[in-house]
Image (tube, rainbow, N blue to C red; front, side, top):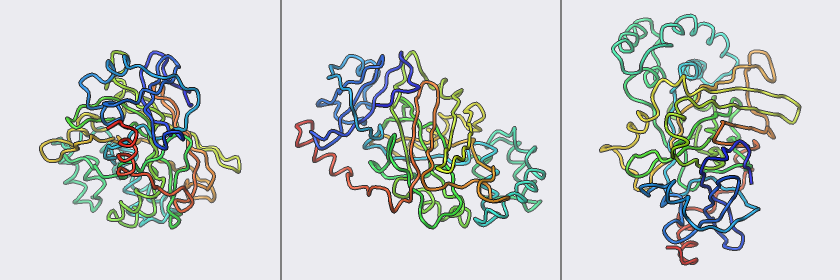
Length: 367
């Protein structure tokens, strides 16, 4: 069980695969102790997040101490949504991908030209503000407008479906790259756990694996770039909001990223939530409301500041993954999420879906 980086005073929930039950169990982590708390009414993470006071209820539940687990992502029935282009620097990288049409060899020259032209003019803009609208009009006149700038500084955030419910992977699992991709990178992010009423009940870490060349060819390939076998990693646990950890802690959270290759290559990066251009609760409000409902809640990736540009294999080619890379994402109070890179075609196939979960819980007398 990976308890590294967890706050001893924090309250966490997660999921572990039980060979005995041939299905998942719900675990609580508190004061370094891991307990199986699975019971009718709390047989899914979805049910826990629907409670009026998840932290208060979970802290009082009886549990069986366990010492060995098989980690699963800490979500189950929730939709898995993601926000893109929520940081200025990563927004510019998306524009570069678009203008390079997915060719990494063109990226550095475009990066220099674009940063010189518009970098300083948009850094401090508030998305959807009158100043942002004026900047948009000016950029259109210069022939520099982009769909990524639209969602970066326009009134409407980019919110897309990252993966299907039950399809994400957790800590220590393989993460997948589609075989057609030659330019890709990890995206370390905070992931909010939101219930059906739009209330944020906790947070965890995520890797929104990104195929830069595929999305760069066309934004209409976003689904192909983002939703592949093993391409969504979430974990290790959801930290439930309580007096010790709130949405304000998310607003000032710091994330670190380390990529270690089999060849000894090491890439270090970071993402600071203090630099996000849209408030996390605004992103939640743009995801759920009268315009869209999620009866089982949703997990929401908040986007990343991290966009690697350091050359790896050849000058001017920037960063791209190699098979076997170990990706480690960490944030104080949320723990460590670690995965190993493989091709999506070589990751274990996704076979345990929502129907399988419900049949398993029914057979165990939990629903």
